[in-house]
Image (cartoon, rainbow, N blue to C red; front, top):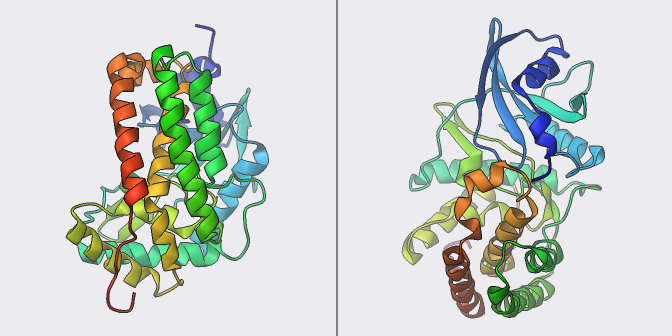
Length: 329
């Protein structure tokens, strides 16, 4: 396997990069569970520590990264608990050798308890505030949550890949075409308003402390429909989901109006996430971290299971109904 750019990101280079800011490291380092970027918790003398994010080479332009930072800072400046990057000489995007990186304050926390309706309503209020600010202007350089990017482009990547065994490609193409075509029809019918989003708002990107929640990892922030930041927070059986939706939206609509027609996009967005995830793995396979972390990806059993999951998801998508919310909803 050819050398990957991250092969040159040694511990010594990481510490050198951090110390170019004037911070003095203690030498303590802990690599966090991130694959898209390299994210390392670093000890700083007489300081609680920081988190360094070394951006994946060639993925984002500087303009894209700076829009991520500016959005995070605007939210933080509005007293919304989002972890924004630190600035050094008024710069948040830093560089050392050939790597671009940013430093963030270290914040602990645990995953929220989404069965706790008080916590869920609190998260809803914060997401309403995020989306209120996010609706003011769109991103100029960040990507869109779109069927083209998450569906068509993802499909093309899988069909071109060596990881998908040849005998599965025809079935994959047929099922994914049906999913993508159905998603396109739904998006065209609903024509959702596109606003600035967190983009990857699942429970793992919300950390809870005694002071409440805070949001981390804005690396996938994008323009898209508000529902994208909401649907991954809802779990359980149909009755539980209904209660959770009503609670989440009660908090959300304290600050920002939600277009209930977007509830029809839940299964479409779930379909696109399934398609995009597998494409993401194929596109990152040359990074040695991926075969180590996902050794099952090239096994036929994975692809058999994946095609079965897509078939099941297609049935859900074709028969999906929006949650029937009561009360003021």
